[in-house]
Length: 150
Image 1 (cartoon, rainbow, N blue to C red):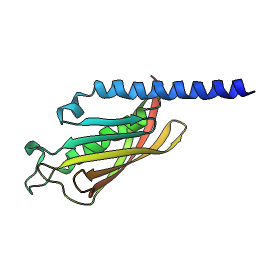
Image 2: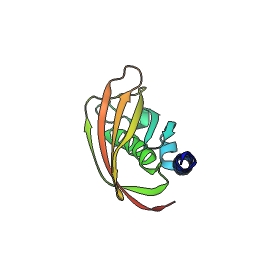
Image 3: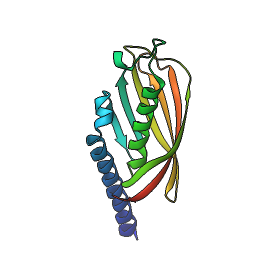
């Protein structure tokens, strides 16, 4: 009996590793995120951390980082977390709440965690913070839909 439980645990670990490898490959192929200077710091099953420096071309007319870039950082981090199970998974919707501004020179860090995965659907929360002081910049909730096994 112990051998069977051990084998199931090994199979689950192998599946998790394959899922994370799939998410890493997706990240390697993501020219949009790379073009914005994003760097994946951590990719685990159901969890990811990505950082992005706020550049001059990301600042709007109010001298703050344009919300679209903050959303994109959160969305890219969301994508890593929800694709880490090895299924091609896309967003079916997302909401964001901006809680504080970020400015030129800030480095933003987004952390995503899958909160619920049911059938082919999922919910993932992402918190975006300023790296220097931990100030929360935005809270994002993404809804996902898995399409097929990678």
